[in-house]
Image (cartoon, rainbow, N blue to C red):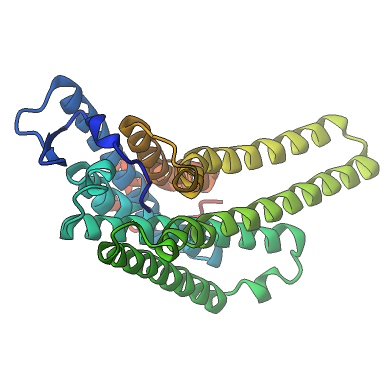
Length: 326
């Protein structure tokens, strides 16, 4: 992600690093805290990779799941599995705090993957919300507006925009080396324009769309209540819509908002940020890639049925690609 202006934070040493010539250097004799931290992060990486690979295998194998909606989920899973494969290991070897003081080639590579894949993950979530909007709010025109061609174009735009944002932020970071102090234009690019394009704007879109979906769902529930009078059914519909949207929005905002608020506002108010706080917020954002399979895939009963068939090895005992999952 982008830099955080944390002058003199270097005095607050990362548990897996020591200070050498005013730079963070990975320690050759890690402490118990460091080993425990890296074991935990390695576990997060493995869960992220396995969970998203399971989603990818499920959509590619079962023909019934190969539809425009699930292609968006597939794109999200690809971005998230790359976060587990690339960003997690690189972030463990070249931490955010260490790269703030000694930004070599590997730090730039780490930052590029971090920004592009995280942005792509967010944009995929945005596209999924758009798909759900047409499915719930405009069901009669849904198949015409959200066909395979449209979804493929959305996916290509997601990955292209993510690459452009990452390139722009990285160029701004490289230009900082030519300034005695951080150039204002680069600070604005890294800490304001970048977060707006890769987080704040998609979040506003997602919030507006899901609120619209919620209102439509409640209106449908009210119509059912008027026509059939099943008070219990209305209550269940309302609770299901509310819980689903609260889960989707809550987990997403909890994981991403703190870090982006930190990198957006702290450079302008020159507040000292402890290294553990920076690291915790950075890993919190990456953990969203681990949680996405549970939110966007495990929630659906047909995905759970497909997962059980894959995990149990049943698909290797015969041809189940055309199985009826729902």
